[in-house]
Amino acid sequence: MNARRDGEPVPPRNPVTVERTSDRELVVTRTFDAPAHIVFKAWTTPELFRQWWLPKSMGMVLRDCEMDVRTGGRYRLVFGEDPAQPAEFFGRYIEVVPNSRLVWTNEEGGESGPVTTVTFDEKDGRTFLTIHELYPSKEALDAAGTGAAEATRETFAQLDELLVMLCANAQA
Amino acid sequence: MVQCSSVTFDTSFTALSDATRRGVLEQLGRADASITDLADKFHMSLTGMKKHVGVLEQAGLVVTEKIGRVRTCKLGPRRLEEEAAWIERYRRLWSARFEELDKLVETLKRREKNDERKKRR
Image (cartoon, rainbow over all chains, first blue to last red; front, side, top):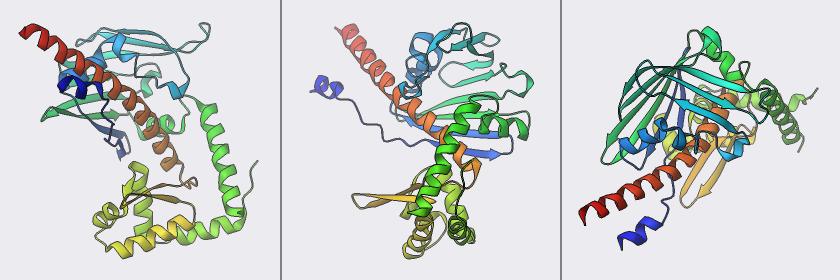
């Protein structure tokens, strides 16, 4: 009976929340139906990490993923199909507490990059995950949000679509 | 580029002239919510909240969907504030990521259980 239950995927019913908690902070939360050591493993093992970090719907390729997950260790993610124009994300782990806490820097954007803290709180076999991003300034977070730092064109294309829809709705 | 009729903005201004409705939009920018959730959060009767959501819905700022007995509200296709729009995009990205992570976590969980069983034998 156990084997049969195991074979059925459990439909995820855990909502994501995103909140800008201050001018410089952004917080994302989500619960996972698994103990913290498993969720932590998925965040810290390159082979596992690359299976979920870029959802298929994004249509992007994670070409390279290196993680030296220990305090002071570095990580590097390389995106993009064209090796001549790679998009790189890199930084350093400031704090690593196995199965409970990860803190890293995001250095690809120079000094405007945030410090990311991920905490894994286990309760009754489930994990409450919190991602906290602290930006050096309000402007840096604004820029990250409006896509000035990344994917500017995509943002404006989406904004255009939005405006077209907006007008279509108004005229209907 | 894209031009909008003034009608659009009139309905929007009416919808946004109320503090509760602005609060509801802000709330939905963070996460979808049921009318009951919203009523609780803003200390308001269900009927009162339904009216507010109705105004926002007419302005296209909110869409609602009834699943079973629960009516869920989310931000509509029209976003006035850039911030609400990017928070929503950010939320979608994380939702998509986490759905993949859910699948992976299930696989890892199963693998761990199987390993434990093997060890016990």
